[in-house]
Length: 370
Image (cartoon, rainbow, N blue to C red; front, side, top):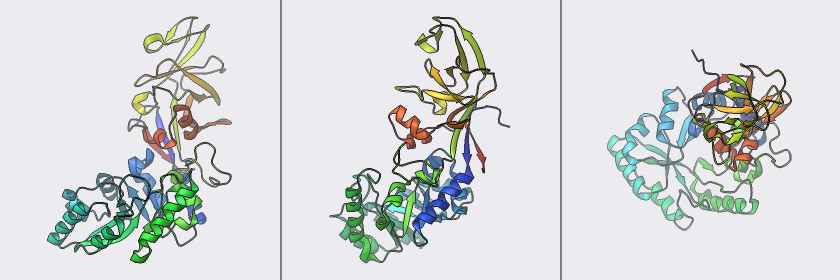
C-alpha cells in the first residue's frame, strides 16, 4: 500500500486522446510510433505504451535494448525500434525479444550479420542517416555506399531508414532541407518504413511524414514550442501528467527567522510556512533555479529556502484557511490556475522534456482515465 503523498498522476485517457488527435491530423496513410523512452518521459512506459497502442499507434520507440526488453516482458507485442546504440554482443536478446535495431556503423552491422548467420535468424534493422543533427547516422556523402553495403549483408533485413530533424520547431527552411535530402537518399530503396518527423515535424511538415512519424512530446500533450506554440498547433492535445503532494507541516515563524539549509531565506515579518514532502530526490530541482511556486487552494505559493532532498518549504501566509493535508499541485491544474511543464521549464532555463523526465522513480505513478 502506498502511503507517501507525493505522486505523479498520469491521465491515460489524455494519452489516448492525444494519439487520436494526431491520427486525425496525419490522415490514414502515416503510421504512428509512440516514443516511450526514458520511462515514457517520466510518465511510465508500460502504461503509456498500452494506452498509445489502444488509440492507434502501431510502433513504440525506445533508446536502449533494456527499455525494449522491459516493454516485451510487460506484454507489449507491437513493433519495437531501439533508436540508439545496441552493442553486437546483445544479439541474442535482440533476436529473443524480436526487437528492431538501428544501424549507423558498418563494423557493427557486419558483426550483427555474422551472429545472425550463425543463429540462422534474421535481424531486422533501420538505418540512421545524419542529415544535419550531427549525432548518430551516416552522413549524406557516406549514405549511398553504406545503404547498398548494408542491404547486401546476409542475415540483415533492412526494414527502414530514418533521420532526425534537429530544429523542426524553430527553423522551417533547414527542416525542409533535411526532409528533401533524406527523401533523395532513400526514395529509390523501396523500403517499407521511412521516417523523419518528431512531434514538431509531424505537425508542421506534411511532406516529411513519409511512412511513419515518431512522436514523443505530443503523445504526452506537451508542446515542442514551449509555452507559446504557434496558433492552433497544439489544439486538441492536453497534458497527461500532473505532479501532486500534500502539506505535512504548518508553523508560524517570527520576523527574521531562517528557513532551510544555510538560512538563505529570512522571514520578512511573521510568516506562515508549510512543509511539503518533495525535494530534489523526486526531481523537484534545487539549483541553480528551483520551480519557484506551486498551487495551494488554487493560489500560487512561493517556494522559500533551499529545496532539500526530501522536503521543501512554502510561504502560505497570504492563503486563507490552509491546513495540514491540503493538496499541493506542483505541475498541473488546481482551481482556476495551472502550472504547466512549459512554464516550469522557462523558469528553470530548460525544456519541458527535462522537467518531466527528471522526475525520479520515488514518486509513485498513479494512473487515471479522465
